[in-house]
Every structure is written in C-alpha cells, then in structure tokens.
Amino acid sequence: MAKQVLSLSLLLVFLFHCTTTSGQPAQAPTLPAVAPAAPANAPAPPGPPDVTKILQKVGGFTILIRLLKSTGVADQLRGQLNDSNIRFTLFAPNDNAFSNLKAGTLNSLNNEEKVRLIQFHILPTYYTLENFQTVSNPVRTQAGDNKPGDYPLNVTSVGSQVNISTGLVNASVSGTLYSNFQLAIYQVDKVLLPLDLFVAKPPSPAPAPAPTKPKPKKTTAGASPKTSTTATPTVVNSGATSLATHGILVSLGVAVFIATFSL
Image (cartoon, rainbow, N blue to C red):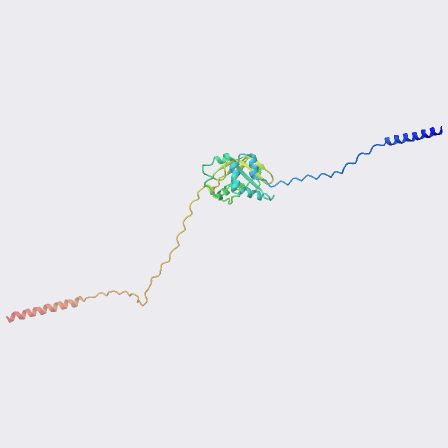
C-alpha cells in the first residue's frame, strides 16, 4: 500500500513538472547580426546652366548651337557662370531666323567676326522681361563698345512686347526659353546684325602732306658776290657839237675861196 502511494506521488510530481515546462513560451531563435545599410550617396550639387544643353532640349536652334561651340563662346559662358555673381541674358535666334539671312552672310565672316556676332546677342546682365521697361539704351553687349557705328543695341518694351533694334535690324522677343536668377534666354525672330560688321565704314581721309622747307643755295668757296653794274648814260653836250660843226664848215668855205682866187 505504501509503495502505491509513493508511485502515485512520483507520478503527480512528474506530471506537474511537465505541465509547468510546457506552459513556458519557447525562446525565439537567435538571428545573425545584420550590418546597418550604408547611406545612399548625396546627389551632386547642380552645375552652372549649360546654354547649349538648354537649347538642344528646346529644339530648333541647330545653327546657333553650332556657332556657340565653334567660336568657343559656349565654353566661355559655362566657365563664367561657375561664379554665381556673374549673370547673362541671351537673345537666341532659331534656325528659321538664320535661314532668312541673305545668302552667304555667315560665310563672309571670319572666325573673329563670328565671335563678335554671337557676343552681340549676349548681355552681361540678367534681365527679366519687366526689366526691359526701364533699361537705359543703348545697352552694352559682350561684343564690346556700344557707341554709334559699332555695337549699339536698343531694347524697348511696350506692354508685354519687347523690341530690339541694332540700327540695321528690328527684331522682337517671341518667348522665354529659360530663366533663373543667373541666366535668361529669350527667343528672337531675327538674327541681330551689328553695324560694325555689316555696314561699310567710310575711308579715313588721307593725312595732309607735311610742309617742305626750302633748301639753301650752295655757294662755292672763293666766289665773290656778284655786283650789279649800272650803265651810266653818256651825256652829249649839244652846244659843243654845234660849235665843232660850225668850225668845220667855215674852214671848208675859206679853202674853197682861196682855191678860186688862185685860179
């Protein structure tokens, strides 16, 4: 009887232990450590505006892009725009504007003149369309002097219409292609032709000849200066002549008389 009680007690203890162990939650399996993800590379800051890429994106400016590249003006602009304090305004004629030029216009220019032509379309200041209402004419361009006969450019604004005059061409702004705080690009309907390149200048007057000094006369050594001699007129005494003549006649008369009586 005692053995049965002991066996029953052991059985109860065993069942209690199993119940307690099965009631505890199972431990989650240990996962391998995962390294933190590397942060993504920060985007590079945007570079300066690229004029040729802007024009390529818009389309229709093949000739202008070619001139910007061949003259080196595109690289010059990009280099200068690295300085955020430098700003520009570009008047951009499209391919249609170039096709309206007289045949041979571009071919008549040498490389330096093509540079001047493209620079004439660039203002060294950033202008909004509203700024043209109060601009002081003639405006200065990258081509150089704005004196009459050289590279003057006049920009006037009436309402929303902006007009440009070179003294040879009258053009209009037909749209804004690009504008930020540093660069503005406006489409124009004509190529801007400067007077200095397309109007013949009058020839410069020939310089007056320098006055010539008279050469001194050469004199030979030992030569005495010439003296002028004045002929002295011979004064004939009319009274003495008359007496001489009278004496001769008397003498002849006497001789004739004596000869008569001697016969």
